[in-house]
Image (cartoon, rainbow, N blue to C red; front, top):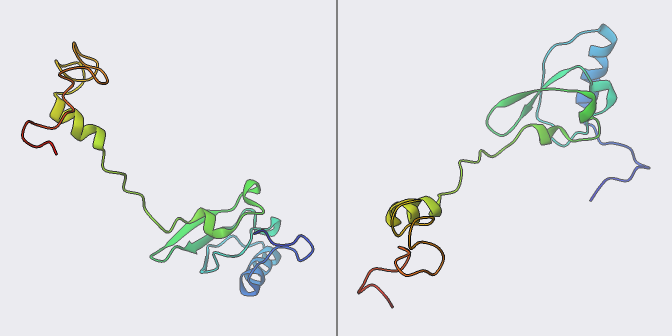
Length: 125
C-alpha cells in the first residue's frame, strides 16, 4: 500500500541530514546506507549512494527518473540463476530439433507416432 500524499515521502533522518550537508558543501562523495526503505527525493539527484543488499554495498547513482522510488528497488537482494530447462532435456532424449522423430522433423509434431516424447516400453504406468 502506498504512503499518503498528505504525509509526504519517508526518508530516514540520518540519511537526509547527510544529503543536506553534502548539498550545502557542494560535495559529491559516496554515502553508505542501510536505509533501503527511504524514498528518493529531488535533493538526492546527482549523488551516489551505496545501498546495502544484505551482503555488500551496491553503488546507485541517483537520476531524475528515480525520484519517488525507494532506494531498495535499485539494489537487488537475490540473484536469479535461471530455471532448469525441461525443454533441453526432452530435446536431448528425442534426438534434437530437425532429427527423425524430433520436433520439426519428419514424423514429428504434437501427438504424431514416433514423436519421441512417449515413455519407454515397460516404464508405462
